[in-house]
Length: 214
Image (spheres, rainbow, N blue to C red):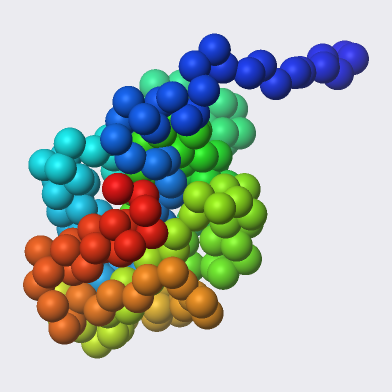
């Protein structure tokens, strides 16, 4: 089958016009950190604070996206054929995690171009994958490293995953038997062990003001 050529279509309403209407610039606010570090909690608090300020934002959460756009073969098999599920479903191998982050980076880019503050909360353990998203969103990407220590994340263990990983029941778990590559030069670093989620949310909002996003 011959390859079909595709073309980029310019929008009738410019990004600048959308940002003016929204009252904020579009960007990607990328939260990364270990499981249990507080990424999703802080991301949603920031979303709420921005909403109260009348700004446009949307949270792309790792678990939520794994239920639809990047669903696992097991989840997809409930509604689709086995062949479809194996072909398009994403697991947690290094290759699947890379594709998971690539897709989210592309979706976040669309949000940013619409004048929306795209807030993502993903472990995104590999530095190269995050750098690829940064390159995809040139000038619009802010990496927020939630640098909560591993021992604190294990103490919290909200989903019981660390316990299973330590017991050998869960293989390839980030921080235990799979690596987490911390950011080298994140735009913002916050520590979930040294402040409340609400205080961390205030730090992020202050950062956005400093950068002229809001």
